[in-house]
Structures are given as C-alpha cells and as structure tokens.
Length: 217
Image (tube, rainbow, N blue to C red; front, side, top):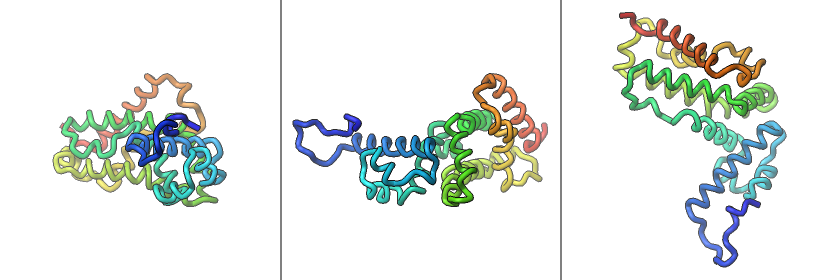
C-alpha cells in the first residue's frame, strides 16, 4: 500500500485532509488508467480497480457513477495535461497564435503513446462495449469541438472569416487538419519521426486551414 495513504500510527483516525482526499482521488484515476491500458476496458472490473487503488467499490460508484464515468475521468485527466479547459474562451491573442498553440498541444496529445493505445482500445472494443465509444466521445471529441465552436462563434473571430464558412463544420475541419493522415498515425510509431519534422508538417496543414477559412487581405 502507498505509505502516503496510511495515517501516522501516533494519530487517531479522523476526517482526511483535503490534500489527502485529492491524493487518493488522483491515485484512483491513475490506477484505473493504467489498468485500462494494460488489460482493456472490458477486462477491467470495478473490483480490480478498487483493490489496486485501495478503495471501496462503493467509492467509485459515489464519485464517478460506475466504470464508464471513471473511464471518462481518466480521459479528461489526460486531456487536461495538454489542453486547459475553456482556455480559448477569453483568449484575445491573434487568431493564428491561438490556433497554432492549440494545434501543437492537441497534436502532442493525440500522438502520445498512451493516447494512441487508448484510441486503439476504443476502436477495438466499441462494438462489444458501446459505452466505451460513448465515454470516449463525451470526454474528448465532444468537449473539444464545443470549445472550438464557442471560440469560432465569437463576433470578432467570426468577422475574420470568409462569409461562406460553415461554423458548424469548422471545429471538425480544424481537428482533421491537425491530425493529418489517420492511417500513418495508427500504423507507424510517431515517436520514430523527428518532432521538428512533425511540427513542420502540422504547420503546413494549419496554413492550408487558414487559407481555407480566413478572409484574404
């Protein structure tokens, strides 16, 4: 057992401190994430997660509503390492600066080894466990698309775009430009390609995005 989770022997047990509760919460999420990656969603039970994280199964139900809710939280925790929630809401920097920064962070997130492993797992298991696909979409693509949609709809941002740009399709279009060729991303190890080269190609795709949506001077 992690010694950080065990109260000192010379103190009477009492209400855990906020820092201790947060540490246990993070330990649970990290443990669940490791098990999902190692065994796959379908082969991981709440009992196994609870045992490995040293918590009660009831705790998982109370905090997350069950396995799918915990899986969503694992995905959100990973996303938050790269993209700050609602970071675009009040960002007043130039359009290309904001999108370039988002593009690099998003690209780093989707090409991280653990992210690729999760995506492969979701694709493989969604047919037999539909809740995997639903949880993945709700925690990742839907929230990211909503964040981008709110940003593009801001009046001062919309005014920079061509009149015929479809705002409803724009978040997905940007994401596809960032992701690039999906086959090479899944078939070949991104780590085998120099990061400078990957960023060079990313910014070429973003340049194409800008030419497609922005008004020309």
